[in-house]
Length: 470
Image (tube, rainbow, N blue to C red; front, side, top):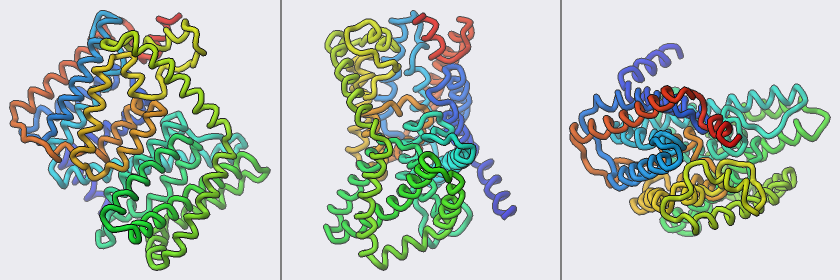
């Protein structure tokens, strides 16, 4: 075991770019929506590594769209604050940086980066499980937010990881510590996802599953597709049901300590997960029965959290409010972080949130329709070139049509790591072009640090906005 870990550490040191990207993803996950100066420092380190690269193969459609989004965000910042470092588009330029670095990796390195990113998500899930068990034993368990600090954010983070895991699932012939860990990570991800009780994440998970099932139907016919779909839903339903049962036991019974027994069952399920998969392959009728039972799990989840219906209705009102501002300011938008201040003064209910729970509408409201069109271009391009993990991308997209996970840098970073395909449909870039791109991004990050330090407010963007609002 120690020898394997030592070999793995040496391999990561040899691939320093991959290691830096993985550390950056972990830092972005822990940073939530992002501190401008911290993200800029991470970006400078990544750009320094990028400047050492001699070539890349990147999809210029995606690069251009992300660059346009960043530029339009900088313009919105200038309109509000008189400089180009204000708002969320400035730290979100880390997405373009990560995309270009992925374009610099070899095929094997990119595959390893994807797997290690999923492994990081598994570590986040394990921490969340430990946190839930601790709170359950103390008698005050609730919806799990974990390292991301928000149940909805943690839910979609784990859903994206689950699709990334399935897209990068190692075959049974692969040996080693990492493949063995990945083969057994699925129940942990889904059980902890269930502890968030995030209805939006469940809907997004279902949307991604439907996308997978539709692909199987086109490729294999209805009989084989139905078998694969039932097996997928059966395994997912078992893990989700375990998480719902853990939440119910900890929150709504007088025996919260029983969650320890359920955690033991999860440990056994994790160890025997490959055997369960083989069992369901050999007996398809069992998968069908478990799939039918999964419908009861869905009903029980909704009954545990009936307020989710009212929450969704409020989000529809929020979207309607945002559409009115798009009509008034279609090109340049109202400016970064201005919608909440306007909502505070208009005749509609005050929603007490910084982001409209539909990312495309929110971006169109604050940065203008051209910025929203840049994001749409990335979406269309991803489906157009038939990237392998379109199911995970679909789940992420559906979630962002009713929530705000795009603004959590770690969630979008994980989506990039597991679903982005810079080499697919990409164009070879020479060392001059690669260095020019990274130099431009480094200049933008350095400018952001300069603005925040010289302005005397080296703290989070949200804190600065709160001061302005007061």
